[in-house]
Amino acid sequence: MRRLGAVVASLALAATVLGLGGAPRAAAAPDRDTQVEVPAGVTAGVAVFDRTTGTFTERHNETMRFRSASVVKLLIALDYLRTHDPRTLSAADRTRLDSMLRSSDDAAASHYWTLGGRTAIIDRTVAQLGLTDTGNPPAGYEDTWGYVAVSAADTVKIYRHILDTASAPVRDYIMGNLRQSTRCGTDGFDQHFGIAGSFERPWAVKQGWSGFGDSGGCTPKPSTTAAATASPSSKQPSKQSPAPRSAAAVDLTKEALHTTGTVGAGDRTIVAVFTLHPDGTPYGTAYTAVNRLTRTLDVPGADRPAGTWFGTWSSGVNVRPRPTTVDSAPLTTLPAGAEVLVSCQKLGQEVTVPPYTNAWWAYLPQYGGYVTNIYLSSPGNQLPGVPVCSS
Image 1 (cartoon, rainbow, N blue to C red):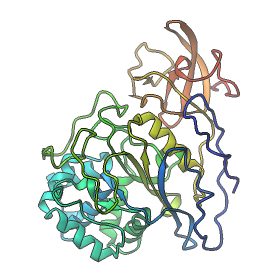
Image 2 (cartoon, rainbow, N blue to C red):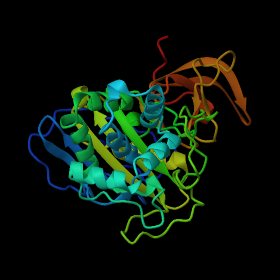
Image 3 (cartoon, one colour):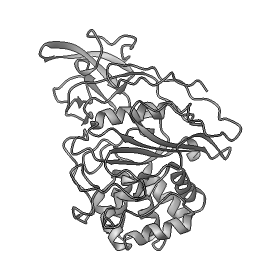
């Protein structure tokens, strides 16, 4: 497999052409800390497991424990479905669970966290799945499910349980929802980074983020579909929430951004990437760093999208279905400063953002829409090396 070049430390102005996927490695790989390309300043735990060969293709700090943020919703769902058949769920349960798994609904997670006995959920699932790095929140924070500790290695075990051990109805229900992951979470964060931002479908993802305030990119924020309301103590903590320096050496304060799930036909490869970022890192910067790290990984069965990566500037940059602002309501907005993949460009409405005027628009295949070239970090009105769209 042709690997990408070294990750550039600066998160602005750079453009990187993606490499191509290739054949899986045939033998189990040892830890290769020097080959997982972690952006400067980022702390990462990574595990990539090829289910076809039964081997790890990437391992880096795989047993390091991170606060789970929303990744713990996998365990919350598994615990509830241990005693509830997905085929006979009530309408209210199906609404909550669908929203929790697809759109990372915090209110739904808090509902099932309380219903399942809070930390008892983790006690049961750790025993059932044989997890070794997963643990409950620190004393005094039992309501805060986002403080559950987990590692990349344990996350691989969780997905292997869902895919290979859980009943077919449970497997199909959970994975079916993860395959329908919505771009915007119910809290207004763009959650299609990492796996979803680096590979073509088929993929299934459960992401996690914590500590970024309200700057998640998606506007307007979608309203929750869950019928429960989370109390402040039950939701993921903001940067202003009191957080102890955990005795279990799990960082509870730095910005956290995690991407987990499966990639390829038949859920061939399980990918788990957990990251912490320097205090004060904007969401778009962390989003870009996780995408860059994920793109360097050896992921058998992955289909990598064609195009060129460009940095963006400004906040609230709209992605539109056509290269115009007229009768072309925004599909979504970009996380401020996020790097984006461009497949082609075309002439459209002339846009002026003083001191710039430009009629060229870039097509972003992963968003299914266009942004004016004004907001892409590149000299000139046209993007270098990017073809003109054929239609």
